[in-house]
Length: 41
Image (cartoon, rainbow, N blue to C red; front, side):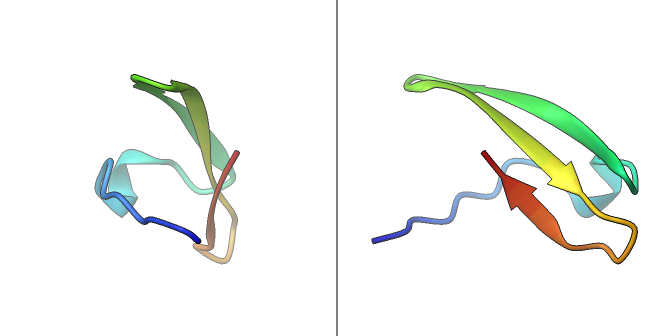
């Protein structure tokens, strides 16, 4: 089961870039592709 949580505006993550989001359960890396797809790990 997946739960989606808004962490930032799309413009806050540069194309072909990433941002680190700190959570209570650990850090999550958020990536944005050149095609504006968003992935998190």
